[in-house]
Image (cartoon, rainbow, N blue to C red):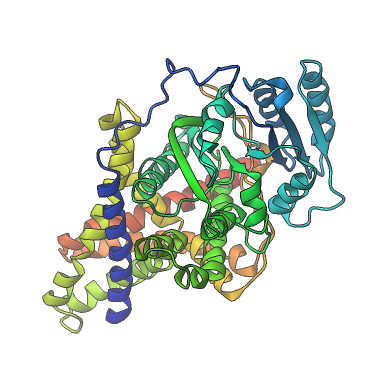
Length: 493
């Protein structure tokens, strides 16, 4: 038990130390705030290439009109871009799309409504299907919950003057980050990814990833890398690494922000996190050997490994949560590891510092009122702990080769200052494995177990261990109570 706990702490420390390295590499980058006064190029002599804007959607009736309208308003030469609505919907969304397309066409937009006979390959399959009919040499992709600003293409396309640049990724903004505690927590995590991880990897000349949306690909890079493939559910990360291993570059433009809707329910968030976790591990299984046998630099290989395997921290978070109190109890009874052991385990504070500083760096880089926002960081870290059961299942299924469908993240048309009702989705459990179906009672059980652990440590006067245990208690209780409240709201409806 002591050895397993030590391994868990060592792994968490290692990944936290890597975040410290990323913080150092991103230091001095300055603020990442869109400059509204900066006007992108309008030179009529600029050879604006033809762009295909792909909109992969599946049952998105609450947001698809907003998405199509935003793309129709793109400030780009009308004769130099087309819009493809890649519609795999099985509800009433196609009828709504048809009306939106008619409205857009009346404003001079070129829009195609592409429907496949089946949903084979899910999002990857839809993008690949659209690519076979696309006219553009460059492919922009927007998920249904994104709202690109009119100058998006004019800001990103000039970067492709570099003929070996395969893709450009913009930074995600948040339409509804102040809607609830849940959305504020999510915003912290995404801000850290873009304002620290993506920025640092770019500055360190390491591999980046296209985040699946709010970016532009060079068509030749997609084709050269083998196209969109559906053997993982992280088709974006997969293609990103295959393209870079084939010699194409990816650029991150952090000063170009594309606002998007954050999941409004815990179930929606868990659906998204499960997909990201499992997909990244699947991609690691698929490409790590290729990465390490390539001629890329050692730095790129190491950072690529950390990048693709980052979600492996979740099983070790869960192990630490299960073993922390039993080890403390054994030590208190004089039958377990002594002070020297726990002294070494205190090195885990290095990992904690990495996770904490990355969030602080991101908030400072993005927001003028960043000191006020720091209060959410402990809750964010606790909430991340609370997600560890579901994400551990995702890791196990990825290694076991268990196939799961691509389950979309629900969208409700959230916007600043607008309250949305999740409706019938709240508390709904997407179809999945038996392990996923028992995740809910396990989260409740871990909430009770972790809280009892806090009470035990307080009762026995082990004050130095209480703070660490509180992260587990608060995290699992937050997730368990949130799930219960969503299910209760659904039953009331």
